[in-house]
Image 1 (cartoon, rainbow, N blue to C red):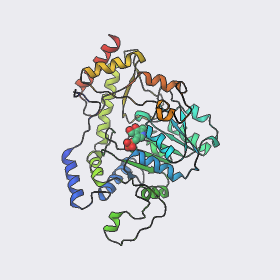
Image 2: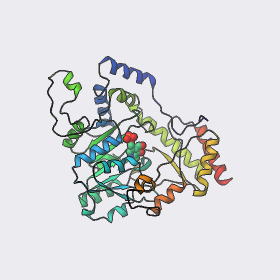
Image 3: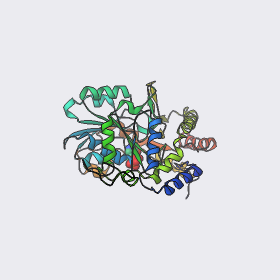
Image 4: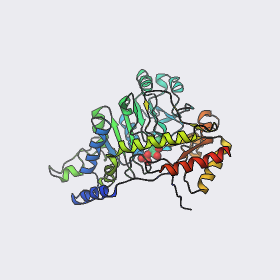
Length: 379
Ligand SMILES: Cc1ncc(COP(=O)(O)O)c(C=O)c1O
């Protein structure tokens, strides 16, 4: 059955997109070139920072970020148990050891009280994720990391627009990584970006994203000689101009889209707030401004699948973020974690549900969604 109201709908201005694609074809670049540079400049402006390096995915960006730190093999990296598996995978791929941390039951982010229990030499790095777009208390997180000398990488796949104390969240970190995957607030179909506080790290991230080549091919082919060096090995993780064009066709509307997200967010809350069985992601830190990437509700574990069924029967898509990492069979068969080890995330997971949430969602559609949920929960 095709869904009347899908979980996610991309919103891309086709006129803007086709004109960007024409540019990419006419100027002779299809892969990384002037459009990717333009996207990087637009992103740096948006994030109020010096430099952004585009890459082929957030996963690639996270791996490059870890590689840049040069951690000793076997070093331990802390991450939330409530995140996408890619963070865990890149830690393993860099010969590092993942250390899972349970979540705070309200914000659904890594529980910082648990992080603080580690002594400086028990961890080598922290990889935090503002889950669903909701920032962590960035100042506190930064202070914990500084005190222990742990570099802080923000997996900012959900939180491009998020701020803390009115500053983009990456300003509290050593590095931040963004995703432009198809369902993200800004998409290039597949893609990502890296922010590095240290400009030398940013320069290394740039070369590492393309095999460690000291000069990218579009610079060489645009004149100035054929010579290049490989000073350190890297990855094939560059973002193409064709993909950058997709993001460029949306990047100027990020602020307007956020306004729309705020309206829809409030409407969801208004329509569901009086149902005591329903709980929302929340945080009482007044400095937090969420990127409102996902709208998630929690109901009881008995009701969740019933709510999903009622929505699906009415042609409405849903999703679920995330299956806790320690419940995946690949992780269970290689590590000692077991069910019960992370009680807060397990309780959250048993009743969570991500609802359709994107700027094009109509108020009438949202009301239909909430009334189906109301009927399913209250009867
Ligand atoms: C929190 C988080 N981190 C990382 C990723 C990986 O992003 P990408 O698909 O761009 O590699 C995702 C993807 O959904 C994600 O949700």
